[in-house]
Length: 342
Image 1: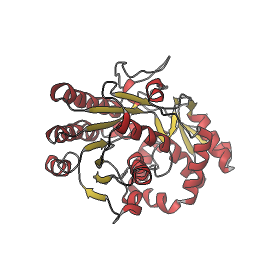
Image 2: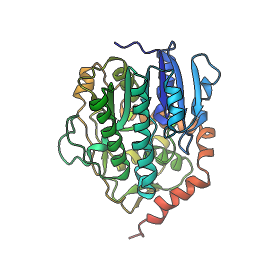
Image 3: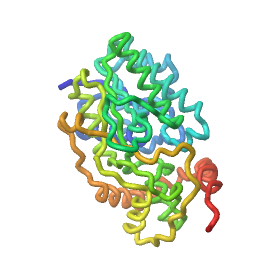
């Protein structure tokens, strides 16, 4: 087991990153945490407001593509956990170059800093989407990467850069590939918070094509526990860890469950034209992470109900985020794609 006392959490103001910081503050209060975040639309300082001014916590507003800033911060820590990324497939279809810059070049700059300062671990938080569409079976960590969207390609590119640093310079690298994650503090552009917040306001719940695309939904608390376990306990010899639940749920099932929890009519579901290059199934083999001692603790029905309640009770958090920029994106992504009525 590694004893890490000073961590740099890149992208720590985002959805999974902020939940990871929250987990560390609760379970490892002795760890000094430096969060570096650019605070783009999905990075929210409100996610970390409870830690401001607290002992052992520091926030730095900056970009992982700023090599001088990253180098100066990295000099004072023992390990880097990189959550920083452009993450939404739909946005990557609109603005692919931004994803390549952050997810590939930014990862390379963090790798270089970790190499230069001889860090004990560099942990890259990746995604199951790097495997591409999985029509049969489940993706294993040694499978080839076959990304099909600019987002998943940029994440795969970041992984290749990091593995090149491991092979060429001995960078002590660990990679996690998480399945679709949900829970509190998720920016309301991803499917589950879109469905929940729209249902609260009585707006249509958009589903691509016929809503049959399958995902493995893991609760953010479970995902963060897995990352923490890998960071502190995983051998470098294994290197890569899939994180998921093994339970498959399609979009229509998610929408129906949200509406049932909220007592809203199924007529709110609206099918829209399909996403270009849509991957209809992701599925990962989680044998390696379970052998390390992790298993999911939050079932999808339990997690979805608690997530719905969180968004109902925290409208002061998400309503300011659904601003002009959000609705401009939403219009481009959904309203302009809406199928005409049959």
